[in-house]
Amino acid sequence: MADIHIEEFYKDVAIALVQLYGAFPRRVNLFVEDIAGPDEPDEFGLHSRRHMACFGALLWLAEEGLLRYVDTIRQEALDQAVLTQAAFIRLSTPAPETLVSEVAPQALASAAKAPPSVRADYSSHIHLFREALRSGSSDRITQVVQTTFFVPPEA
Image (cartoon, rainbow, N blue to C red; front, side, top):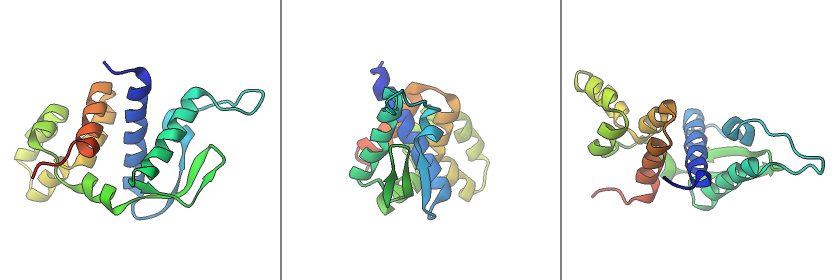
């Protein structure tokens, strides 16, 4: 089991990318509270560690070339964020069948009887992101994010 802040990082990344994919190609404001939950700044106006970790994850996604944004809105949001081409293509492509069978076995069974376009959708990385988030399993979320972005794709 990973450190809790790493599990939160993977969940924040998954939620942010699903939100951006759902809006693609429109630019949207990506609010930390929509990803990490509500936050009340302290008496000095400082956000919680959890809020700042999520904000840091969003900035990291931009630094790694997975999203672009115009500006930050204080430490509350990224203004006019959009997926990069690389992130969009990666999320749209089919995932390895082994990952699909581990993360979304019911989708794999349903896809067997479905038309080719539906099968392709069920096997995409973005579908696995959604399924992992729906499951609420930190292990599944971590596995999908790592496999999608941190493990080189199979040739």
